Length: 229
Ligand code: DC
Picture (tube, rainbow, N blue to C red):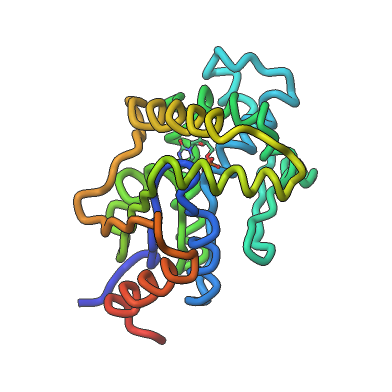
């Protein structure tokens, strides 16, 4: 049977399980394009705040989306994001902005629009590795290979603390653990695009694995399903 449509690998899971690192490494091992959908929700939030939109009004956020040019491109292991030509790749990681993204990500109209953009990106690129919360369930239910990553909360807090330390910031492990638990609850309880594994997703517990070990497992699974061309 010939396959129609793009070839997609989805990687979903909660914050701090290492999705971005493994997704971008897997994409470069396979030679496929990489899409960080969290960065899309962050970029929309940045644009909405920058343009003074009221984040309590979904219509205001939708209007910003329609009036703004969003662009993303691969840059080594990360994705650079531009809003109306301005590089916001660092600005969208700001902890204060992170706190506001949740509100935007829970708007059904916004999710529908961004899922449409994600599908258009896949159609343009042909082969993509995409990461987020709803990629295997909502955006790409027909994906050729779906992964759902998990890790112990304590380990996720440890990794986050290390990342922040590298950026020169010191935050207590306890505080980070609480943040993670709060984000998990909100991601799972959202009525649209909630965080949950697709029934056909392969679960990978990354607690005791390095990023490269996770990528090795994934490459093997993808190669078993997709013939090289
Ligand atoms: O993965 P991240 O921390 O960059 O995600 C930022 C926010 O966007 C977070 O609140 C979860 C949300 N998100 C989502 O709702 N759906 C996605 N596909 C990706 C991210």
